[in-house]
Image 1 (cartoon, rainbow, N blue to C red):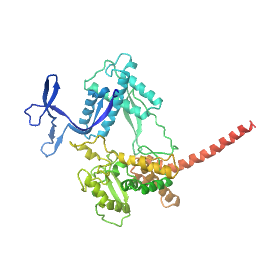
Image 2 (image 1 turned 180 degrees about the vertical axis):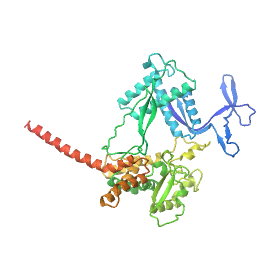
Image 3 (image 1 turned 45 degrees about the vertical axis):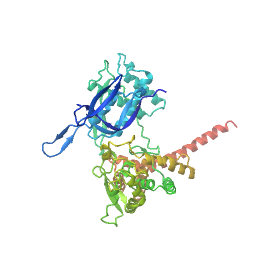
Image 4 (image 1 turned 180 degrees about the horizontal axis):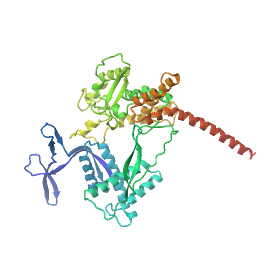
Length: 486
């Protein structure tokens, strides 16, 4: 069976260059060729180093080794040279190489290559008639796939954008200069507002092969747009969740879920906590809650490397300390790379593997790595899918129940909002103070995001009342129509 184009991840990738056989770092390579072998020597490509003129600081340029390096394979598992060199070029030009970003780009390039192979289109041939050019044909293919419901509009937009960037790089590097333009580009200005509400314009270059996605903001959809479409769990559903976690009895998964429900932290923040973060002695053990700075310089990941503060209940902090000292946690740390140290991740799998690899660790090259996928919380999501959701659906007769881990953050936000709005109704605080409190605890950059939480309950009540009234109206009309047949 013929193999289709795809992406693979190499656990270890080392860029090499030709070397003299006498070079101490060289490695002899033998390739069989007929009756005799072809031999040559290679060494790891040397990294250029620069200093800043005597301060002792040394800057390394152009990384030559990577873990989880994405490779795009064409049909029959043949590497697509231009695509792979493009990926390498972008990685080596990046100040901070996030491999998941380039893995996603490789997925998009592989999808394009599958289309080329299936349609037998030459990706380098750009004829005079523009609709026969590969970029126009692929754009049309993606639009049809969206119309047929095969892929989401956002996926089509991302894939086409990746191909535009790929051809732009090919042209800039002189690798491929098409006889006819791969697209028609134009500039336009769009109006935007910053997080403080100030308006500004931005120049955007677009093409006629780009795919636009029009988002419709529906405040009555039962979700909140806060880093994704989130569905806050009701108080009843939160009870179901805690019951499921308690019954299943997985200590780590219970603590991880409670961590999110009590602080609103994202999964990458919770899973990159280290042991030493929960072993520090408290200056004032009588405090109701502890303030935890997270983000750059703390060793704890945040979205977009934002410096924020988590507010952790003192009683839950004590539970995390007890877990860190437990034999169960120690056994897991002893199985982990690096062993039982204060710098080890707080939450590990039963085999001692991290559930999420922080950005700093992912930048450190490990020549002995055997991982073929990045650790981004898959173990938690698998536990939710295979254990928690089926348990709740069966026990509580809720066949449509579902949740994402990020929904727990929205649930935390709604819990805060309900409490604050109750205080507003009692006259204890003003609506402005309640709004600022929720905004601070949720670490929102824009107040408009916080307002979505404040409006959520009223939107649900409104749509329910309208629905009930409209349903009654339709029932009356239907009854009148049926009376005519009697």
